[in-house]
Length: 189
Image (cartoon, rainbow, N blue to C red; front, top):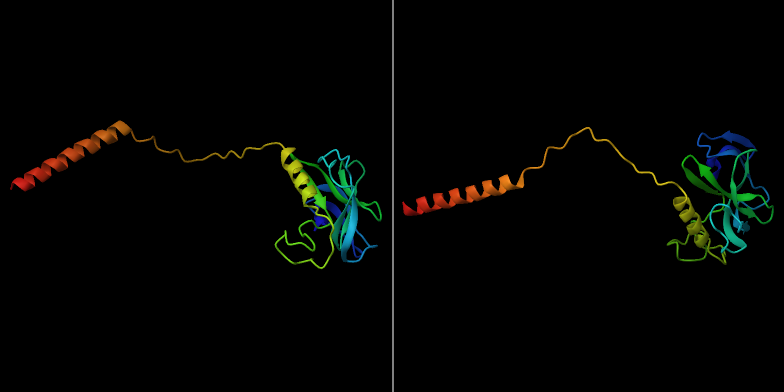
């Protein structure tokens, strides 16, 4: 659930805290939409994170018992998209540690009423557009704007020195001569 990215959650009358806490703030259930439906979000085309300037102003997205996000005062976030019916944050992003995060309550993984996702799950919904180009832009931003970190491991085992090739070739040559001499001796007997 996208709620786990926040350190607090309020859903169906219960308050929960999560240790992951990528974002200091609370996620709240969206109570003015059906549990499962298509809804619209307005895209922040002036985003200071991923370049969304070429994205449509609004997109139709799959909503399943979703949430909106309210960061704590002083918590830096980039608002990616808001629900059009309430103007509350549906997608946020920002920096965490040495990288970035993206949190979305609406579901992008399905291409409703399309075959591109390889499943007919959720195909009963009519989706006039694809969110995948926006998700690709955001994914590229997540990778490209994060620092490159090399995973350098130390190895406690010291490999042996390589075998000297000239010694191997001389030994093979001497061995071949000895075998040839042995064959000649056996044939003469």
